[in-house]
Image 1 (tube, rainbow, N blue to C red):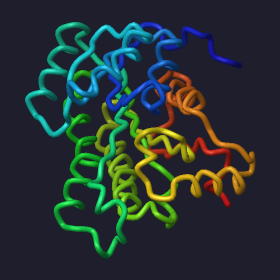
Image 2 (image 1 turned 60 degrees about the vertical axis):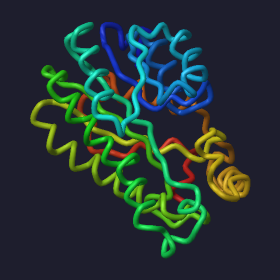
Image 3 (image 1 turned 90 degrees about the horizontal axis):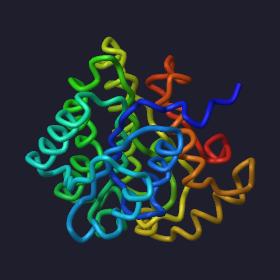
Length: 257
């Protein structure tokens, strides 16, 4: 049975990591809004705001706030706003990753201590910080999603240090699913195939990675942010109320070959 178009009606969610209209988080936000959810959308800084605001307006976001996940005061402010406006949170999407360019484009063995620490803090520990803030707002249960990539499981050329970082992210999500499961808070990971987003374009030789995915995936095509959004909407809905601790691949089957 297919879900109704309003199967998220009455739910409220926070989407962190929208970079622009073509980002994975934007695809998720549109799918949530189309399914009836009310949203809070964040942007990293004033420079990013002009790229994120059209997405927030398109989905009718009830909250639109700055959030640099390295800033504890901004994090507190976002969740305080949610608490005052809605008094609860039904789902959270964490779609954030960062690594300094020199460390991202170099060999893993050459990654600096500072670059590794920063990549882990922004890409992984930020999920823990957001989950801790979300927990008391999910008194009746909820869902937390984060975003990974196949390079967490297999060595992908030029993905470099982000492979170990994403592996840590997926493991963290599994441990959080156990920590929070007793409160009926589900934690899952989305793992899309390579997408032509601004964030992905920072990976060296990204065009070759795209071509390989298209050639080797059983469906012989790339996934889309709309398809990732559809999976995200399903996972935060009651249709997936028994799904937790999972990594959902949306990659045309590329991860099996």
